[in-house]
Length: 321
Image (cartoon, rainbow, N blue to C red; front, side):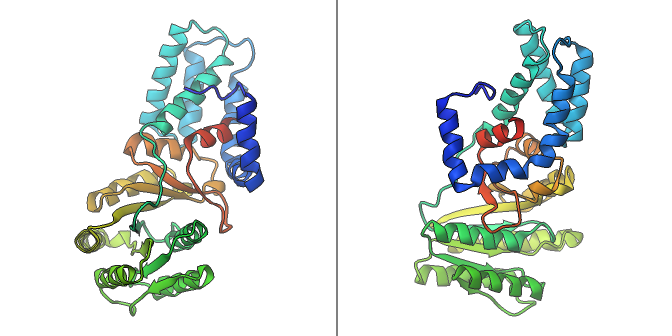
């Protein structure tokens, strides 16, 4: 466990290093609404001299649920807090905040591993329409290009001409290649051609856009399964990832979307967009706790550099500081 309220010189050096890039400050700014809705309310009930009792935990539980931490996750957190408070014989309510931060960190940090491109990698980007899949691909392409990787985009959302055109614009912005077919083409065949091109051009990362017509759930899921089968068959010498893009502003609905997509594909990571646009950033905690899928990237702004790799320690620090 980490003590998020007892800073040392090393902590300051970490923050200073991040501030030079502007990443940590953008993360803090992106969580401002959540912090006002979540941490400020917690500070309000954990006043000096207040007793640690059932009433306190009930108020804390309500704050967590309203921040979209989720009912089951909240219950688990509260139960653990009660047990620790009893073990440590806490009488000062202010100490509960530190325990809460550590509890959230334990949830977020569990099985967390950093995402690195160490071999040719195909990333299937899935999610419903409107969550920002295509824009996210553009931002990922920018990040990987800056890391020195050769990137290829595959426009496999062939049911929307606008999606194909938008992806082509991002390819131009990032100076990377794109494989596209005409609107209405078979998405799996676009990916097939994309993988073939990637092999011949020594591409490091393939970013594949997919359709997200959840109102036509059965057809969409069958289509994704077909794409996934092509990926496994044609790209078996590389690493295959399936990243699900979720809109943080949709709250618990994002959890339901994730469960549906998990039925069709092996979702290996979550990309959470529009985190700066919601006061309910607790959804990050709920996703990790309920789905046990790593959060790989979070969007904390509209800028091309505002899609950040997720780091549980920095997230909790930015949430509570």
